Image (cartoon, rainbow, N blue to C red; front, side, top):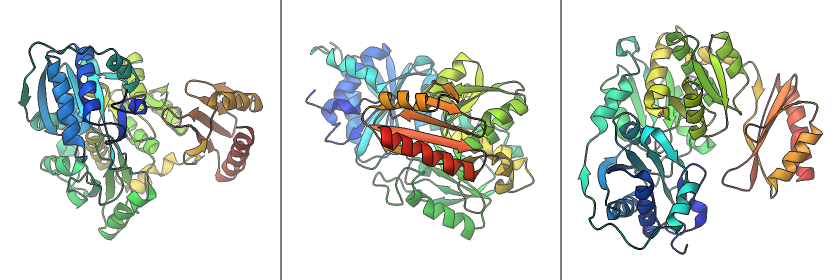
Length: 445
């Protein structure tokens, strides 16, 4: 298609550089194709504060209304407000114009249908190719709606405010939608917020929108220590991911945060299912079992977490990228629901966050490591043969487990990369085994 780059159609959403890869013409076609797949009377459309969002949003709405569907424009909202509109409030379909944590030049969208069925970007590409030239005889109408009051009440329904302590919390909005929502939530909570980068700005002047980048962590680490805060929280641009920082300025890994959430949910519903993905620490399933829950293993990706929650009657789930999904949020993820639940759970502790998470540091786990590779399937075959004495699992890529360490290697959905995650009983074993694994892949790729 001349109007856009086919590479914008990702495994879970649509995303690309504006205007080189995705422009208004592409957005218009996306809107039309989505409308035909939605088969709805009315579609909810929201957006974040990205530079290209207004133009792309308008084009998507034009495409939807040209197919005869009406649009409810809910304005600048966090992504889980769109999820709540469709999954909780009963709207038939929704689109969020966003590029999540990508750099400023990116734009795209995430799409859901009734019952929170995500539309994958790859699916919509086929629909666009088949679009007829003719549009509907009668154009749909557009109306504005302020969904935030209902949305905020939904978020707060997950906690008992009286159980939340008056924490002092540094919140880094990263110039994203958290800068709009946190002040509204703060009116309902007893906490004192120290704000960082609350001005909505798609140029991300404070730091990159990805909280995992080292340069994104400098400000919040410094502020937590200087302000003597109880802890800090940092969001990405569309707020579906959040990371905690303890009172010493140290980042808490997302699978550790998952355990804090899981403990509260298992206290509420003993025996409930908790979903985690293949690259989470093995302390996660161990403690879920110890606490009387059912650990449910899933492929990487928030869509897969939701799928396994539905299939296996899970109450919540999370993954290493810091998406946390909840059954009572229509199985969708929400950064703000995770935040308020964590505030309540931490309020029940008589120790700082660094002490709360200390028991979870049983194993030594490295950060994800990426290797450029052309033929990922061929190298996976070689890895399985070389490490055949281990316990092999192929739920997502290849996971191989030994008595004192394990690793997962899986191809990227979007780039020619092999993603490697490993964990061992201690740092010495980790460094030895990980070094051997990387050398083997580099030699045989």
